[in-house]
Length: 169
Image 1 (tube, rainbow, N blue to C red):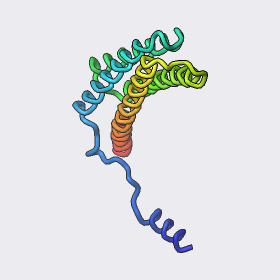
Image 2 (cartoon, helix red, strand yellow):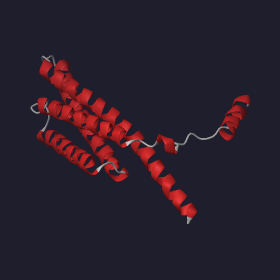
Image 3 (spheres, helix red, strand yellow):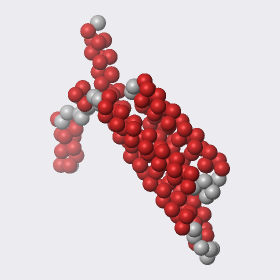
């Protein structure tokens, strides 16, 4: 009971943690994140290429297409500057590339496990390719999360401007 009272007290007495206008991401911050995202997508392309003979053609092609889409969005953000719309598109695409990396790694790992269980020798190249895809997936997830946080801060700042301008009218 004491715990419940404490939790309720904390919930009603403390102020919510909303981003402040001073937390607006700078163009330089977003540009740096977009550049890092570009590097992570390029790393995925290398990992996907190393796994080409170990995954199905459809998995390989989906990975290539997702990476190409990510590069296109990144180029547009670099050329036109950041917008909430473009950054959300980038987040969705980075998540798609990340999912492709995870699916490729999982498929390779399954085959390696099946080989090991049946007494066959497990290919070190297959394990290396699965590891490269896992590393790419992890780094894509990390950069996607960073871009998401910057995008949410940008959206909050834009909403604040809109709300303030509506109050002045």
